[in-house]
Length: 387
Image (tube, rainbow, N blue to C red; front, side):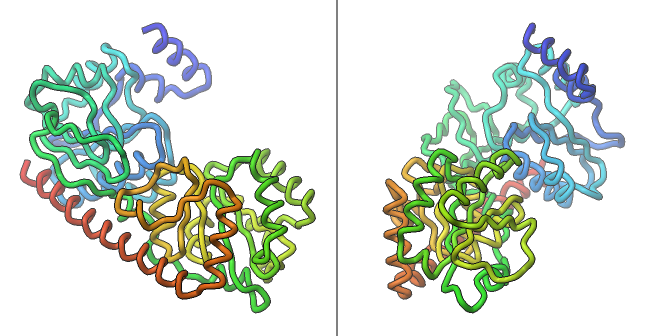
């Protein structure tokens, strides 16, 4: 309780009264009539994105209910994109992991159904719900870990990336694994950006996402010594990029004799092989994936993985990258070092048939995963409709 009160004081001191109230469970349900469905997201971008999109889909299916989305971190762009204009909804921060807060939240919202999105519910909320068997409970896009003598969830819709086994004893019904993010990434992105960057003098574009700052020097050294650097461009993207990281990155690029090109300042002229492209805004990620011969992913989230494999480019992975669906395990090349990445990129350049065939296989698997996602989401929406 002390930690909860300490967070409450911090929030109020920084002017975030609404979050402070939410931590204590002091929230108000949306106005209007109708039963209430509560969607619970965690603090990750993927979770809030999935929950927002699911709320919008339920809103279209069930006009008679009120809908509430709570989260532990706010992503305003996601909320605006998926929930603007919807009626009978509410959204905001969720309660703290405290018995008092969980009970207060349940009492104020009085939901007839709760959908947990992306991760297990907080322990105190789970304990409070064990005494309320009449509430419909759904696990969406995670694999429940807790042991239970009887099913806690009415239904579980596990995602296809986690390596955890699915504990079916906690679910009355368990769907096949799938990933709803396949429906939320941009699957049809124009390649015009790549054409504009490369112009007529450059053969292709290669793309690296989320390389650690301490490894950038080694990567640039290997790139500068490779044959493909003489005829190709290199683009770098990052998750949650900030000004200090960009400044440091620019200095390292200059140190190796290259000129950094920030896409926010790009004049839409072709880029030369003596320049390194930096995407200083995440909005460029999808277009760079689509425009690249190959995208190499260092440790990243599932959303960025699915965006890459939907792009039509060949995708490679760092050895420690776990954001990968089982169906891709034998298809995507895993590299121990950036030497291996450069070597594989050179092979793709010299063997266009290999590049095309690998790209086709990746896209085929992606669309198969997307169709499975459509099927399972429609089943969930029908379940909600039948409530």
